[in-house]
Amino acid sequence: MVEDTASARKPAHTPFHRAWLIALVACLTIVAAAAFAAMPGLLTDPLHTEYSWSRGTIGVAASVNMIVYGLIAPFAAALMDRFGIRRIALVALATIVVGAGLTTLMTAAWQLTLYWGLLIGAGTGSLAMTFAATVTNNWFVERRGLVIGTLTGASAFGQLVFLPALAWIIDHQGWRPAIVTLALTAGVMIVLIAFVLRDHPADLGQRPYGATAFVEKPKTDQGAARRTLRVLYSSVNSRQFWLLGGTFAVCGATTNGILWTHFVPAAQDQGMAVTVAAALVSTVGVFSLVGTVLSGWLTDRMDPRVLLVVYYVSRGALLAMLPALLGPDAGAAMMAFVVVFGLLDVATVPPTIMLCHRVFGADGAIVFGWVNAVHQVGAGTMAVFGGFTRDVTGGYGPVWLLAAALCGVAAVLALQIGRGGGSGAEKPAEESHEDEGARA
Figure 1 (cartoon, one colour):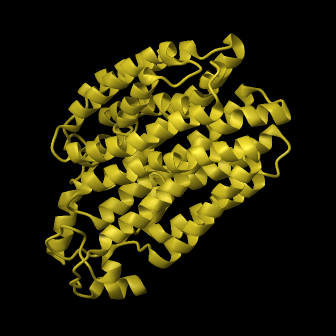
Figure 2 (cartoon, rainbow, N blue to C red):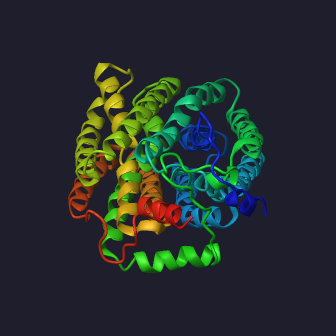
């Protein structure tokens, strides 16, 4: 095998470490996949108008998308360990392209749930946070917090790049051309990944960035599904898993579940133009990237639990104020909201990933995949709740206040998470790299 030959070679000396190019390609992949997460909020009114489907029905498809997105992630992490990052990324992108193409041909609500909910949910979920965590763990020993912050911030940045353009396309050309645009973007990424992305530094005879010794490419003996379920079985018996999962469920409910899915229709209810509302969400994406990179930098230097408490308390305060801020115009107060919310939007991810690795060690990426699945369950539940609340009450006011209260709960849970190395924890991933290097 090519991998075995490469692993046996001595580390190559290069002035520019390939890890940074790999991180860049991973970043672009996440950007392309994340653009699909912006679509449910933009599709709600067009689909309601064309097919007379209720917002609750459309919310069910968005909810299935989010739940599948979360449930596929831990299996994708194990599959990447077994078959390689590049192969799984290519399959995931192909699945996205197929799902997007079929969505443009749908005629019934169940097809939206199947194509957008199941296929695109599975594809994008395979190229999200666990993808970022796996790439980072394989290619970096130093600067992990910074890199994971940048890669997870790329998710929000993807929505920033595409959201205003997608809103314009939908407004002027219809929703189908917007989906075709995303499918073509995913197709371009298939070509880029095939030529550039590699699974592990050992494939190129290099060390991970910051490693002091050569690291052999890990060999996974057990099946990916079996390993994923084994990790789930062992982690669910840990109180730390449920604390991490509980906080991250609230994260999903208060970002993907409510803001990313329902902000645009909620703003339209107040008389705001769809393009203006989409631009505000896009602004959240701009500052999400800044906030997540900053959060990754802070995670390398501070207690991640303290960061989580600060993030959730601040997010809850902002959501409690939002009903009073929504109106037909985007004034200074609303702009301040989107800037600060953006800084907090994905900032919870780097400290959560770091805590998963500290507590669960070598299985940290897969554990985080399951924690992320809980995140998506929270997001999906809130997406459905928001849609049905709008159908029944005619507004979103109670949903924003519930989201604010949940943030307070998450802050309390974050205080109880252990520092790491607790019961059932394996060696931290950093130590595993060093040990592998020493054995080599």
